[in-house]
Picture 1 (cartoon, helix red, strand yellow):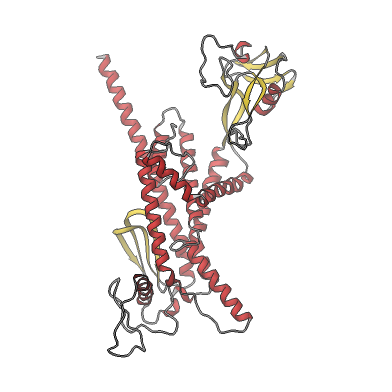
Picture 2 (tube, one colour; picture 1 turned 120 degrees about the horizontal axis):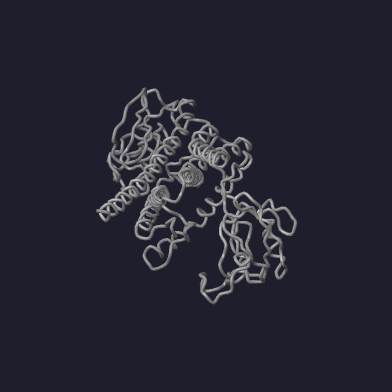
Length: 476
């Protein structure tokens, strides 16, 4: 009977872990959907305020799952939740000096322009030219009778920039809010003056093994009677208020006997510890080993006791939020700037025997997997799980903010770059008293846009595949 209960307990534990994993994935999916929805609202609100007619507000791509029309705008959700869009009329201006007499009905159909002789042989345009004409024609057909003044391309440059930056700005705002709750409400993990671990033996930092054996020399901390849970009160009479204070004293006191006062079980105890000179890594501000020109970790001989701090969540002031957001923006921008090489590394790992870079790019599938793993770990407190979810969603919104600023269509940054170019061109035309060159024909960039879409699709497929066959895991 006992074995049956044990088996049932094991089964119920597995079911609970699976349900928690699914819960973590759902939290990220819902959070991502809300982030995308708010991103599109960032475009929608200024577009409507500036009088542009918006015909659609959609979350996702592909077949429409459901939609409802309110006023002149159809609001809905589509089957593939990997993005969203709003449809504004008149995204592209008509061709300068030419009027389209007959509409294109297919991708490779021919557009007959005014001024062409009747019966003249029609030269079939290239795929790129047809793509440009189709985009321009679709834009023209989106403008109804008497609506030309509400076309997007008719807006002043600064208004178009505001509309296109509205989406990324919304993601930045979401990230600031999430990081504010995370840092000010939950705090960040910081080392305390309480011992979290006490090493049993002394091993050099470069040792091939990091587990103790019987013949190994006992670590000074364990030999001196220090135990996990002790709180450092003073060392050689100097009050210890931060972990860094104790580290500095120990590292510079190799061979010297130190009087260590600790608080244990509510009372103070005095112990003696003699740090041993041993090889340790030189760490940078981020706590990572520094490397030399050859890429090898730098070591130094310092005093060693063999103790590690327990960490605690310490709420941060409001002044810490924006620097944290800025640091995350910088890290994300660095990933994007080095994206070609990072994708090569991902492909090498996915199709070979190499390991994934835990700090490299991942897909939505990878983000969901990590969230699921975090929520399924029994040893992590609920508060820490919530904090982790907030951190993940905050980082995802930073990624959406930075990535959408890349100056390539169909990303928001591409529209901003086009509007800026138009503004600069018109400024110099006015400065030198030349004819107004008119709006920039962004439709001419459709072949490049198509290529970017293909590249983004390929990148997404690669990352999804890598996150399935060789995922990045919180378990290492």
